[in-house]
Every structure is written in structure tokens, then in C-alpha cells.
Length: 282
Image 1 (cartoon, rainbow, N blue to C red):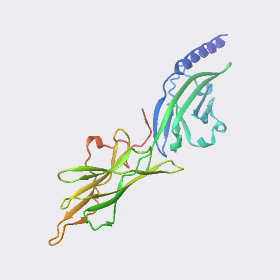
Image 2 (image 1 turned 90 degrees about the horizontal axis):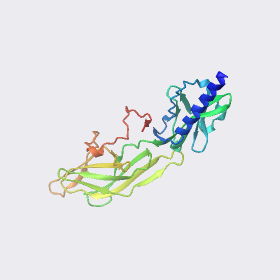
Image 3 (image 1 turned 135 degrees about the horizontal axis):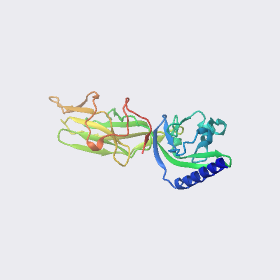
Image 4 (image 1 turned 120 degrees about the vertical axis):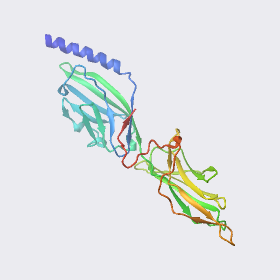
């Protein structure tokens, strides 16, 4: 009788807990393309229940099962084929790791925890999380095009950046001289890979360079409305005056040093080669 009362008491407690948590807001989670994302469950386990007494599973927004742990035993036959071999359960943190994250994995996920008792399954916890996926665009690259006019002060160039997500806001050129800085807009061409859903973007532009003026050119990719910017390496153009002739353009090699950036131009999404690109939670 004591055991039955204890079970009923646990059932009452956990059902109330489930009702209280059912309206909780979704947790925002973020992962980088082809890496690992976290789908947390945040179960505090106040009764210190054993995994042998629980049924735990995650499903996506289409009700497809990512992972199931039935009384301490994994049940891969209940997992949808697109998630087979892509998940691992962190028992210490009650978190499911989703490996090799793809753009198509973005969306809403839910975890469910049930207590397996004499009266059957009792829901004791559930939680939703929204996963967003990012991919770092390559550093914008400037390429000069051969001048097709007789005017040596006309510069033709393209700028491109590849393999990023989500779609960036805009791409533009910035010209800097000793005395001024000007920005030149262009229509950003974009294409999206049908398989990976990653974007490639580029612009093409022609503009005139003031004679006898040294100019530094930057191509800038604005990644989001918050003005997170990604700079190309500086491209230097030097104008020289040849005696007896009109001034003409000579192209210098691209310098490798990074340009100085203002506070608003710090790119806080793009990572360096040694940077930490693990999933970040908000």
C-alpha cells in the first residue's frame, strides 16, 4: 500500500510539473553549418529518478523522432532515417547533440520525458527549442578586370564571397584616399546551392579614380541588419605622373594586412581559424 501511495504521489507531482512547464517559452539555440548543435531539455530531476524509470525522446517540427531512450536503452528503430547516426545524448546535461548540422535542420524541436510506472507512462517534463543555423561567408575578394576603355582612371572590378548563410543584407565598395572616403553601391548578385542551401554573392562595378591620387579599395559585406560587416583585404591603387605624358594607373599588389575597422565594423559572427565555433545558446 505504501508503494502504491508513493507512486500515486509521484504521479500527482509530475503531472502538475508538466502542466506548469507546458507554457514555457522556447529556448533559442544556434549552431554552425556542418558542426554540432545542442537541443537542451533542462530537466532538473527533482525526484532524482533513474534513467531506468524514464522514457526520453526528441522530435522535430514535423514530428519526426531524432532520438529515443527507453528505460535506459536507446531505441534506434524509432528514429527517422535522416537522424540516424547524427545524435548523442549528454546524460549529465539532459541535452541532445545534433551532429553535422545542415541548413535544413533549422527549426523547432521538442524534448519529452515520461515516467514509466505501474500505471503506464506519466508525462513529467517537456521543452521546446528553436535552432538557427549559421555559415561563415568567405572573406570578400576583389578582382580587377582589364580596362576596356581608353581612360586609365576608370577601374572595373568584381567582388565575391561564398558559402555563407543566411542571405546577407548588401555588398558595396569603399574608396579611401588621404582626404576622403566614399561608398559605391551595386546590385548584389546571389545564388543558392540547391543541396547545401548556402549562398554565394558578388557585385561588379566601374568607377573613376581621381588622377594623381593614391586610393585604397575595400569590398564590404554587410551580414545582417545590425550592420555586422566583413571586410576584404585592402587593394591599393597608386597613380603616378609620367613626364611628358598624361598620368596613368599602375596597379600595386594586394597587401595582406587587415584594414583597421571602426567599432561598428567589427565582424562578431565570422570566426578566425583558431576561433571557437561551437554552438552558442541565447
